[in-house]
Length: 229
Image 1: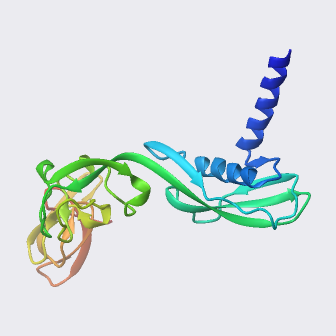
Image 2 (image 1 turned 120 degrees about the vertical axis):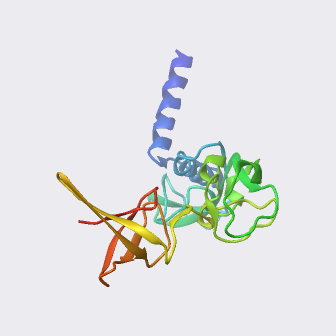
């Protein structure tokens, strides 16, 4: 009987945590609420997740029977964040608790110094393991995200690689003669023109036709331009 009562009480407490609401009257209760909310925020991260709230001084807070945890708008899901804790029964106060979300996982660094414009190969990259929360936003997590991409800027050896440093390889270059294709139900018309701008596959290209007219289309893998109808 005693064991069953314990299990019931534990289930009630768990339900309160899951809803972001719990009963508490001390600093540890506030920290626990903040950490539980941070775990919900980080739930989509891939890796070993841990959370730790900063110590809370509740000595100046009126006694509270029930707390509610919430996530402020535009909160990141990793690294140093703030979780809101407000009293919804017994008092009326609202505080922000600093919490660190650590996610230990693999990420990609450069094996050697690399210059801008280089097309990345597997041999240019290293796998490392560490806390993603302490790395720049957009750090590349797997070689597949980088191999075949072109560096926008030079990167030193051993640096974490970021997605905003990469671009798809160009299939069309400014001034290049290109084949322009217009397609519709039962027909395809082709003509030649000159590209006005660089483009990777899937990007918009402006093309000057021999008549002087300028048209726009989408760059294809083979370097042709598919007109937008």
